[in-house]
Length: 182
Image (cartoon, rainbow, N blue to C red):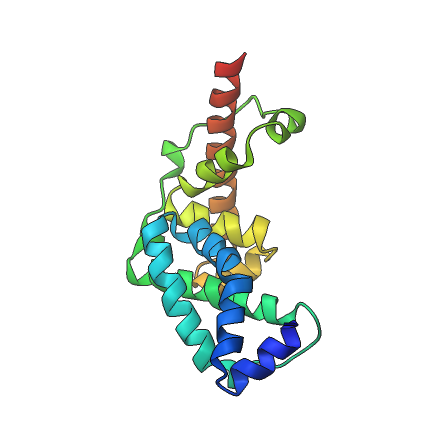
């Protein structure tokens, strides 16, 4: 089934299309949610809620060609994750700049590229919620600090500083990991 077929079927309430939507995009959307909330069990609940919301929101979706359904779902699930984090007051838990270790030895890109991807994703998932959220929005979703600020209702500078702190914390954890291998 193509994206267009799935979209048309879901708009018409076709359960076969809904099942196919879940089959094709469920794993990807679960990964997106885990990136934001850092907890697999909570992510599964949000995945379920997000698909219900998607099924009920197809009237708001506009087909713009191949890939537009995936992009729409991704944005829907990012927003679902952010709503959860706000309600859980997770986005208020920023770590003070004094608590961030200043990293002078930035790991070499080649060394980082040889690390298991699962480990890097775990390091990202272990970041404080505010850092993790800004890091994901900036690096993985490609938003600017201005867009992040608007989305999270924070100053653009706050987004930039949270991103800087997230990078520092990740660099520190990666450096510690690499030093144990040496």
